Image 1 (spheres, helix red, strand yellow):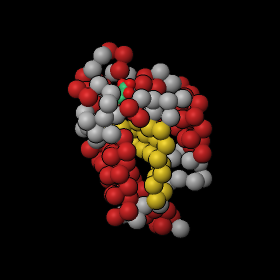
Image 2 (spheres, rainbow, N blue to C red):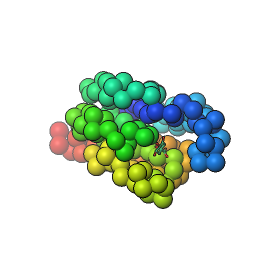
Image 3 (cartoon, protein in one colour):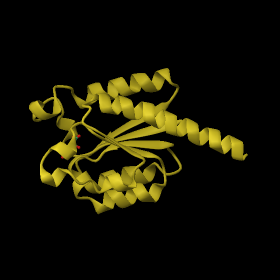
Length: 153
Ligand code: DQA
């Protein structure tokens, strides 16, 4: 079972960036915790962060035929990127979208996520713990998919 974690623009700045909004935890620390969960549950995990829309599209496309699921925080591109939304729809993999903050309780322009319309689930407002919840959720989704494939075989 392989999960790819994709992080959008400015998330490399976590721990420095607007700490009153995003908290003190660095992206590497969040990834360490996810790696720990993955190791304990026998899951292969890869991480990717980019500030560039096209690189995020490329990384999503590369997951096709390689990964079983994607956990993504498209960050500001959630609100603007048809290209990322289309890439998610194209790969036909289970995708969980994570936002550290509750985007529905913030500025008007953050309240709509284009990508949310094509993902299995959205976790928002749980801070870094949202990524842990996403790992649990993705494990559940993939186990259910594997079980239904077995009954079909
Ligand atoms: C974010 C919310 C976005 O609106 C913002 O642009 C981000 C982070 C979050 O995790 O809460 O960069 O995706």
